[in-house]
Length: 137
Image 1 (spheres, rainbow, N blue to C red):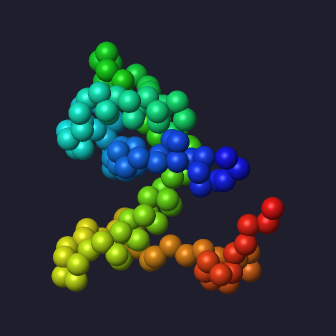
Image 2 (cartoon, helix red, strand yellow):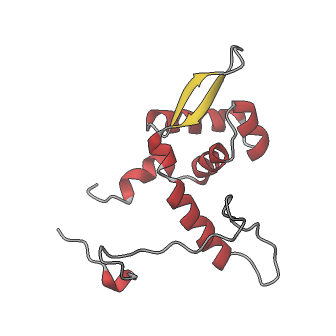
């Protein structure tokens, strides 16, 4: 498809894949860590990891402790998913938590302050909404 939304869905379109990427950002590296965190069946986890490897979002590297295990680490392509995850987090925080329900906040590590909502801005700095953007074919 000629759609820049449809194409990446092959790589990250199921929720397990995005949760694996989320866990990789949180420092998880080994198969067992992902499996324990997600409670995912091993065959499904293995398939999702293979897909993320095939799409260049994760790479398998030898474990740093010299064991026979391998670590799964984010590539640059994987790191570039960070704003996508944060946008999804903030959207979910807004629309999928009831009033008074606790949602862990995103905090700026340096300052200890909450992270501001993501914004889409024009080249000149104007805030953009859906009505302000067009796909030029």
